[in-house]
Each structure stands twice: as C-alpha cells, then as structure tokens.
Amino acid sequence: MGEWTEESQQLVERAKAGRLDAVDALYREHADRIYGYLAASVGNRQDAEDLTIQTFVRMMESLDRFEARAAPFAAWLHRIARNLAIDHFRASARARERVGRPGPREGRAASAEEQALTVLERQGVRAQIASLPLPQREVLTLKFVCGLSNAETAVVLEKSEGAVKALQHRALVTLQQRSSLAA
Image (cartoon, rainbow, N blue to C red):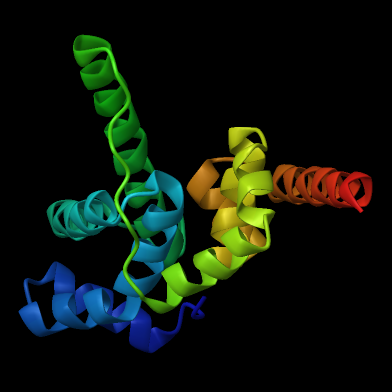
C-alpha cells in the first residue's frame, strides 16, 4: 500500500475542493485494490464491480469528512468498501430469505487479483481461507490480497494492531495445521 505522502495529501485536498482530475487520480490509484478486496469478499464479479463503483461514489460524498490524522486514506477507503460489502451481505441474506434459496455465483474475469485468487483456489488454499472465522478471513484478505499494512488493516477493521497481528497469527497457524493434516 502506498505511503501517505505530501503528494497524496494534496491529491485528497484537491479532490475535496471538487477537482475531478484529482478524483480520477484517486480512482486510478486505488480502484484495483478495492476491486480485489471486494471480489475476494463477495465472490461475484458483477457485485464486486458494482460495490467498487459505490465505494468511490461514497468516497466522493464523504470526502469532506476524511481526516488524515484519523486514518490513512487507503485504510479509510477500504473501510468504506468493507461497510458496503457488509450491507451487500445483509441485503442478500434478506433477499434469500424472501425467495428461499441461495443466489447464483458468476464466473470470474481475468484481472490480476482474480488470477491470483484462481491460483489460490486451484491449490485449495482459498477454500481453507473461506472456512476461517470472518475476522481471520478479513485480516488475510486485507493484508495479502489488498496489500494493506497491519496499521491500515487495524483501521479498516476498527481493531488494534495487536489484535490484527493475533488474528493473522491464528489464521496462519490454523491453515498450517490443516495443511499438515492433509499431507
């Protein structure tokens, strides 16, 4: 994840002032990582694309409330994406309850993030990660798919850095134990 530089801060300030070129630059800088996170979270290409767009719309609506002192911009943006993914799951659960069956899953496009996920899936790791408790799964996705630091992951999940490290450790130990049992 990129460092919070003076250039990044100026870009955010220009976007806050309504400069569309700055908003476009923020989109280009962060869209792939946001999409990768959402694709890993929701497991559906179309939903991930829609949620990525919604993330940047929400960013534009909320940019005036962003404070660099409170969180790095990338972590703040990932938190928006996470909240939208949670809302998506709640809405999907309500829709399934009304209809009484699970929704269909679509095939994946060949973006770099999705190619990486496909490789993981072939190796069986993705299924193992999917079986982890949600907090552990989120930590691994944010750290290893999105490339966030421990500090940024802590901001997104609203946990301490120590809690993020502990969740990551537990998740990796669990995965290691499962792979040892399978061998």
